[in-house]
Image 1 (spheres, helix red, strand yellow):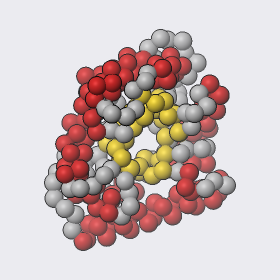
Image 2 (cartoon, rainbow, N blue to C red; image 1 turned 90 degrees about the vertical axis):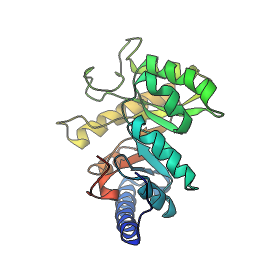
Image 3 (cartoon, helix red, strand yellow; image 1 turned 30 degrees about the horizontal axis):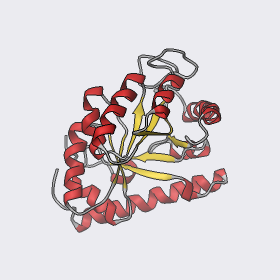
Length: 245
């Protein structure tokens, strides 16, 4: 995982970053939005810590990971290199990993059950000196077999409102907003239009929870058009190259 990125790799990352920023700027112009209102998260999962350090040198400090086994040592390695990053945990999270994740993550995007919310609250109470930002992962298609809390459901563990209430009521956490992934087989337009409806109703109940994490390399323009404040970009930024696994 270790090793600094050489000049060729830094040039690749710089080119990818310029292209992604151009796409974000264009999408914001089309939607009548200020590009400053969209945060690009560089998804560094399976890529080495050297890439994360190089991205930070290019001004990218928001980094995303989806597996604690990889993220925890990578975050430590990046910190040891003298780099201050803002780590976003974006993958499915098991409750038994909560204590590890709260030590390095600044934001957890994938809270999809009340039980996980409570585990994070307990871990954050003793493992952090500031509140942990959290987003509720929403199930757009309502399929309980996929990850995501269920809009409109009264299920005390998986319903969107019950999960949000746990997060909002925990002193060690801050409810920041919602996250979603377009379901397989859905066109991005349909998926993010549905998410925008859910987000509007959600903000009526939680006015301070304005973050909307949606869109990846292939569909970030559509997500921005429907109000995404955070886009999670991997291959379009880092390229298709030999990775850690």
